[in-house]
Length: 460
Image (tube, rainbow, N blue to C red; front, side, top):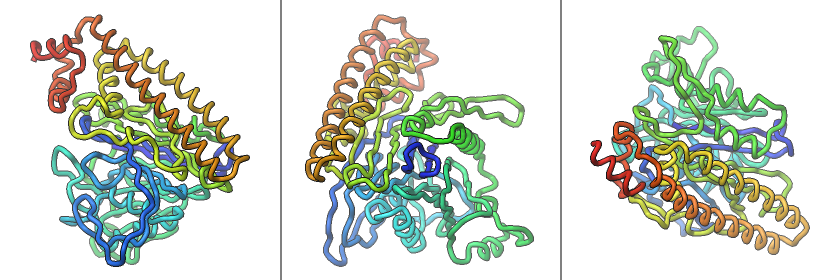
């Protein structure tokens, strides 16, 4: 489960491109924000991705990415040239390579090697056609899937959808969303050689009508109603106003108004902002809204507004990718709860809110206050940076980002302490509603609230 959206210059308030993604993963899968420097490599170097080795490029670009702690690849990322990419799991008829590349590997490779969105697209195409897709993409159980991507830069964006080694790509005009379903139908701008002939030969398409990529290559036995519902909801929200801003795209990621109607007419929530609500597993682990601005000096070309966890219960902070490395604390975190990890602190706060819903207004109010302060501080700093020589502008933006990250980390510590104190004064939630979370918390050593843990054990 993931959701990615983009709006290009004709649909934004300032003529920029704005990209947004929620990365939804299993609840205990830590997803730190990692930074990698630009690097040069000797000829014939090799690169180990998550499951297999491939040739290394001679040069890779500086980039940040939201990286599941056990993977080489990224769920979302932005590079120093203002290329942003997000992926979605989709399920097609094609098979999987036993040791192919993951969609997250392709995403990072596109960012490391692409100066523009179109460059990144073709980096990914070349590797896809050579190595295919495959390998386990899940931390808890065997799971493989194909991938859909949005690839954006300050001047354009592309939707790139894949099935095995076959693919189609559509240039975005205005606004576009993707989710966990194929969305490219009869209209595309580029595609793999033999795309239609292969589908006809496999009996997936009759050839008697205009070819539709999603219908031909999508797995007809897969239930994709949730992905279709979220795709339609995001498309509707994106179309709700003529010119969108970063705040509008953040609101898309925080949206909870999607509703799935099943075959019997029953309704169920299908939010873009994911929370684990058994029997449905998975939650938003991290989000990025990337503001990609043409005709701006390098430090201002791309700013990534990042947050940990479900974005409705989190705050955002800016990273200026071309202005050098962000605070290394953002990259802290692994498979066990770590109080030094901002991902895990944020996760513990959100789990308390899920257990004690009366804490939600407190947490949301605090984060919305920090959001307002961060946007205002960024506006002031960017206005000054435009008047400065590039080295000084980079230094000032780096200092701004570092200061706002420190404030984010301090707010996490304050909210962790405050919500723990308030939760300890509340009646324990019913044990039957906490069995699921008791097992998850115990698996990673996350102590929610001492008396709550005791209550869970007694109830279980």
